[in-house]
Amino acid sequence: MRVPLESRYLLPESLNQIKRFLMTEPILGSLLIAVIFGLTLGLLRRIFGRIGYEIILIAILISVIALVLSGAGYTLFTVKGFRFGG
Image 1 (cartoon, rainbow, N blue to C red):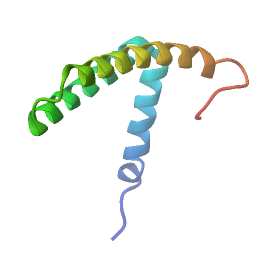
Image 2 (image 1 turned 60 degrees about the horizontal axis):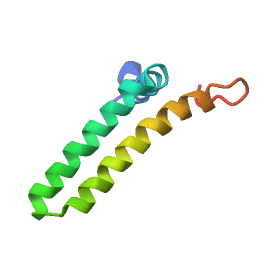
Image 3 (image 1 turned 60 degrees about the vertical axis):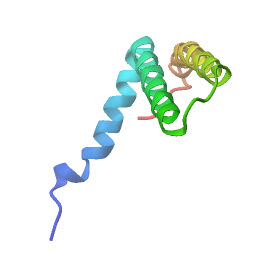
């Protein structure tokens, strides 16, 4: 049974769309990553019980660093001759 050509390239195209979104909207993309990270941390906290405020503060710090680095990464990786991806 042959797989249709469109469905074969469905996943890479969606990954390209995500990459394009993160490159064109670094602030929104990094906020989305921070929200997903926070939700994951909240879920893990619910599963494993009370973790402690130090871990949550570290997670907030990591989210802020991710915000800054994604903006800086957007600037770094779009410099001429240093582009990544297609």
